[in-house]
Length: 196
Ligand code: SAM
Image 1 (cartoon, rainbow, N blue to C red):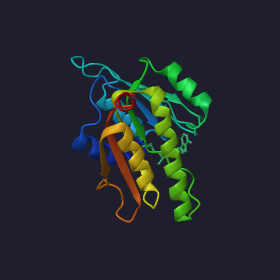
Image 2 (image 1 turned 90 degrees about the horizontal axis):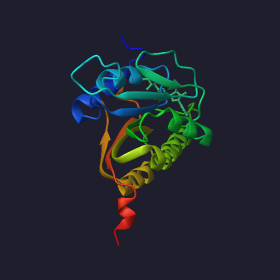
Image 3 (image 1 turned 180 degrees about the horizontal axis):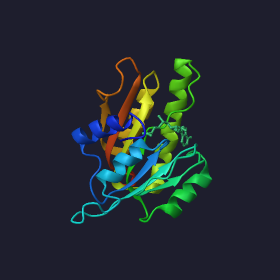
């Protein structure tokens, strides 16, 4: 049993697009109450449940408190946009960089659709900046956004840094909701700048 229905969105996306597998190291941004982390713990084999597969790692970060979850490390009461949080993430990661960054983050909605959209796009852009220090080359980002006029800014930035960028609308996302995900694979930061 999952802590939240949002688990089914990640399960659906992962079944189709193969984001998680045993042995990977994952940062789950906006992790509270912890359903995506539950899915990630299973799929990366963070508990070593499958003795024949490599053991992965899951770090969940959120502004809010998150109840402990076996197999996951949590960084609660932490704002992803705060530089102190970045340092803490780097300390907690067992490897220098993560293979996958998941973001189901959502700012408190004001109800003004355009404003909420902009806030979430800005949050995703900040996360993309952080990737430079915490995502390994060829790594993956899955991030939620609310659709609107500035989505293309985020998409363009992702396309500058990742070789494969897709737009995903999970079935399990309610039809009327404006939420969409970008799945960006094959992070190539650094490589682009070396080409002339
Ligand atoms: N994926 C989660 C799950 O399956 O349990 C649900 C995530 S919920 C939709 C969005 C979360 O993003 C909230 O818990 C919120 O506190 C968090 N959040 C929003 N802005 C954040 C920020 N700047 N830093 C960290 N977390 C943030």
